[in-house]
Image (tube, rainbow, N blue to C red; front, side, top):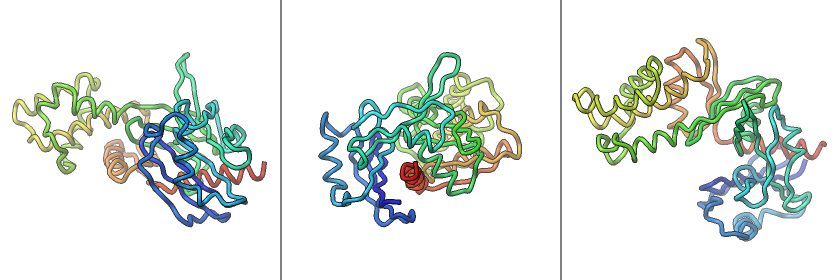
Length: 295
């Protein structure tokens, strides 16, 4: 095993970790240099200024995330599901052969419509290793949440849910924005629970979203509680489509605030949550590097 520079290069941020052969993180760095800030042809210079001093002879660099997209440094075509670590390692796109590579995302197709993820697959593999799991149901909440089914350490199925983006659209650009406070108040657990329950037992978000306005109109909920209620509505809408059973366990990966909300929402269905921190990305990239070394 070689020393690894593990990089997560997304749309809005760039972070990297120097990892030794045993998987220990020696140092990490974070920059506000997501791919959208990089001019055409500028990726080598940004990489060199950020991590050039770490790229000593014998160091391997694997880059997960949107840097491997068509808008990134070097496009790494998607691997079709089902996909495991070996499939990912086989389809690396080498920027510099044997030295720097982008990691492919994963794709799936249902009824002629494709779905994709890029970067989350690395987190998933890392989470499986950190938790010692071969089979799991995972959710990676965010702007575009990903629900992932893993069987025998292979991503068997996944789906994308635009939950965070719909929350932002309703929060900022709909008639509801006139009712909601301009700044985000502290999370209101009671209002959030009310939103989740209403979503779980109602027809759909096109109907339930209007209740944000009517609860305000009839003074049934204070303005500062409404954003939490709306958050509960959109997350509850996502959860009720997942065919979850009482007693199930879901691995939740994301920011502290989002994982806490999903854990709170899942409890309404009698589903427990296991949280995984941001170290999953580094563990996943280390596993891909080890797979390349033994291939």
